[in-house]
Structure formats: C-alpha cells, structure tokens
Length: 318
Length: 310
Image (cartoon, rainbow over the protein chains, first blue to last red):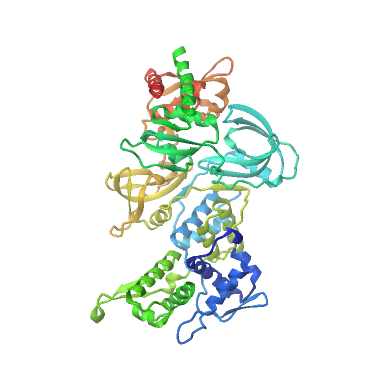
C-alpha cells in the first residue's frame, strides 16, 4: 500500500480518499502537506493535484466556492467549511472489518473488556446497532506457548526450542530469535531468525515441545518477514497437479492452490497445489487414497504407491 | 469535459445540498457542460457516476414520481444518512482499534478506509502478534443480518435456504453461520466458504427473535471427528509408534491413553463414529499408527488402502 508502488489512481479511489481527507483537514484548518501525505498514504504531488481539483468544484451560482482550500508554502489552508465536514458513514464491509478486527484482537493477549479496545469496540458496536457480542464470536484458541513467544519478541530474547519437524519426522534443538507470532487457518506459528539455517523460518507452535529462555538478545537479521497469508504463494515452490474425487474436495478448501478446473461428469476436479514439503504431500496422498490421482509430475504416483504399500504391510504382518 | 473526480464531487455536493429531489434533466442542467448532450450518453454517464458513488458507500435515495411527470425518477442524498454518526472515540480507544487492525487486517484497503473515517492514521505493518482472519464476501451482509435480526436467503449443498442468522463463529480457521433453517424447521450450522453464490437479506419477512441464551460457541461440536456422528459410538483402539507417541498424546489428552508399551509406543482410544474423518486422521501418521479394533473399522482401512493401489 505504499504510495511509491501504486499504479495510476482511478476516479473512485481519488474521491474516496478525498472524502476522508477533507473532514480531517477542515477540523484542523491548516496542515503541512507532508503530514497529510503521510497520514493518507499519498505523495505530496497527489495531494496537491486532488486538492487543486476540488478547489475548482462548485455549483451555480457559486462556481469555485464549494470547497475553500489552497496550498501555499508547504501548508494546506482550509477556509470556512460548508460541505464534507463529516466523514462518510461506514459501509457494510468497513463496519465488518472494524468489528471483526476488534473482536479478534480481544482474543489476543492484553485485551480486556474495560480496557481501551473493549471500550472503543462497545462504542462502535452501539453506533452500528449491534446490541451484543454473542452474534459474532471469534475463537483463536491461543496456546500458552504463543504468549511465551510473543513476550520473547517484545524483549528481543533468543529462545532454545525443541521442534518436531513435520517434514522429516524428527526432533531438533534450535536457537531462535522470535520476530512475529501469527495464527492462520486455525494454526499458530512463530516466525524467527533460526541460528541453525541462518535464515528466517516459520515454525508451527504446536510442534514445539519445549521452550527455554537463553538470556541472549542478539541483533535481529535484516531479512524481511513473510507477509502472513502470502507465504504459501512463493512461485519457486514446486507444483503438483492432481485429480480429486468429491470426497477429496476438502483439499481445495483447506490448502492454497493455484487453480482448479470445473468438476467433470463424475464430479472430479483437477487442481494444482504448491508442495512445500514432500513428506507432507506424501501423507496427504495416502490419506486421500482412491479419491486422488496424480496427473504430474508422474514420480508422485510411485511415491504415493510406495507409502501406501508400507502402511498396508503393517496390517498384513499382524 | 470536466475531470471525472470533479464531476463526481459536484454531483455529490448537488445531491447533498438540494432542498428537493432532482431528476436527471435537472441535475444535468445544474452541472451544465459536465454531462454529455445526447440523452442516451447522458443517462449512461449518470448511471456510471451513481454506481461509483454507491460503491464508495454514498446512500443515494430515489423516488419515482406520479402526476404529469409520471415514471420519472428523482434523486437526493439525506445528510443524516450520509454522515458518520459521532462515535466520540477517546484517543486511547482509537489507538487500540488501530492496533487491532494492524494485528488482524494488515493490507486490507477497506480496513484502512474505515480507520480513516474514524479519524485514525495509516495501519502499521509488523505487529508482534498477527491473526490472519479468513475473508469471505458474504460476511458483511451476514453480520448486518445477525445484528438487525433479518432472515437471509442463500444456496448451500444445492438447496435454496431461508435462514434466521443467530450468530457467526470463527473456529479452527473457518467461519460458520449458525441459525434456524425455515425449510428444515431446526437449528443448522453452515460453513460460510461453502455457501454457493450471494447471500441476500429477505425484505419480506419480519425481524426474527433469537433464543435469549444463544451462544455460537456452545452450539458447535468440539472434536471435528464428531461432526455428524453419534456421540455414543464406541472408540477405536489405535497403536501409535514411539516416534509419534508424544505428539499424539499431547493432541488427544493423556486420558485417551489405554496402554503404554515397552519402548515408548502407546495405545489410544479415538472417536471413530465418523469413519472417513477417523481414517483421514489415522493415515496422516502413515505406518506409525495402526487401528487394532473394532474389526469393522480395521477392515475398512485395509479396503481403502487396497482400493488406492488398484
């Protein structure tokens, strides 16, 4: 959302931004252009262009007098306000975003009903006609370890963890500097500088067996954190194309995928999935059994077969 | 012709200021030179502007009049419906909402617009704890319907439903709607990402009453293996190898352990009433887990694996 990376702005976006910016400017009367630009995520040139434009707006017989605003010497000046003194009401989507975000944050640590978030949320709910909170419930099911790790992020403290690697099915001891704790699709994760690999790694918190403080506060790496929700979509991750029968369609709902076909006459769909871990995908194919067929790469057909035979051997042995 | 932003701003100002509803001919007259001359082009441009303003959230009222101008539509904007009602948020409350949005909706442009309307600044990135809430286009409408007690209509599992939405629940990464299904005459739970197409509020039904003690959290089965299953069905006995034992016992709880074997393997009791869900969980452990009994479930697993190799 940074101003530098955005493409050309459409008329609707420009107007939308103006309608929140004008009331804010009118309340203040005079504001440095730089401050307004930063607050509304625009360049100074974009602000100047939009304000010059609205200054020309008008209705007969008072052409050019609708919005009395001009820029001089790096300052925005606003005259006597008549219109657009209050922001536009929240639309249904914005109301939802605020309420859902507020109620989710109440499930994070440190929030209580009498605190600022609880009070702000109560005012918001009242203004939107929500008389209670039992209409929308958010369970984030936060494990204790998430709190321990969030504290470590705040203190910048390195932690010693033992981690059950889901991909290799082994337990490793690691020194990690936690940098962010997040929850996505019902699971909790910690993203940390991992000393062993020298990289930023994401760990599933329910696979961390033990956590101990080290008392060390090393300098965090300058590597950027992955944006939650986008860390599945890395184009360098290998892809596998599979056909899925109706009982296996949950895979498409549960896991990220590039694209899917429409169902054929028997209800099978073809989907392409990023495979972040080979053991994970092997397990998935065994679980799906006769309800999944690998299209390509064909090596996966053999991998799935061999794994299925190993499981079956266990039943035939006894 | 004027810049589109200028025309939209003028149209907005005109409809807010007008003491009485205006027809398109009157609007084009007031905004002289800003709309095309030809009637068809003028109507098309105006419809586009009206849609743009409504998309931004501007409530444009309209009425169809009778009398000598019968059939003509007139438009206006009611200022009290346009303006955001004063929330009077204190500074610390505003900051708390801003932090909440940073933790749950980083990168959402509607969340940013909402915060700007309330008078907040740019939503930060890089919060310590982030909850990535799943999105669904139906949620804003459903929330409105829950809050105003209006019946909704949608398609689910190939059937048209009329549902009194009692509440919304986010659990295990999915949004659920819990409500009263008119056709079935009972309470039902729906996964929102499985709703087919749009959700609409039924304007013809009276607002419903919700049971006073309703709480979405108690209206939901705890163990996903129990969804759609009979709670009195017997458990399956599953042997877990030592390499997996600790993780499985942590997931299920130690009260599920029936036997501890030499070398670290364990035997655990697991609900198996919903056989496909049970099988999927079991096979996730590959050859490190084996269902011992009941025999019917064991046979089912073997048949499933053989079918995969066929």
